[in-house]
Figure 1 (cartoon, rainbow, N blue to C red):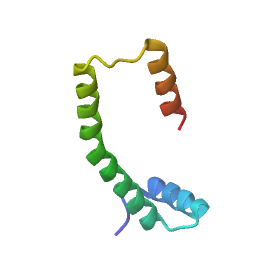
Figure 2 (spheres, rainbow, N blue to C red; figure 1 turned 90 degrees about the vertical axis):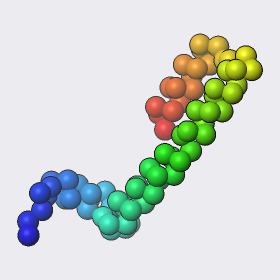
Figure 3 (spheres, helix red, strand yellow; figure 1 turned 135 degrees about the vertical axis):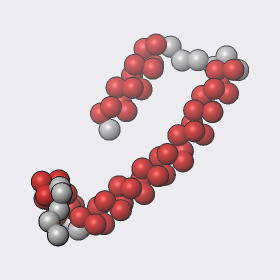
Figure 4 (tube, rainbow, N blue to C red; figure 1 turned 180 degrees about the horizontal axis):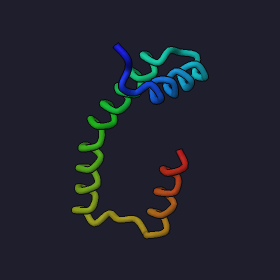
Length: 73
């Protein structure tokens, strides 16, 4: 059976080869990282809410710097 996504599969194979692994392992690792992040996100949001409730805020410039750093990584 032909794949519905041959271009995407080819790209995954290229990325995996550069990483020294195979496409299946690459996808599994990415899925696991996504699940881990999904599990951490609600806790991080709750911590932010708790800090805000205590009146702990950061200045706009600091927030801008943090967002910039997150986007670069």
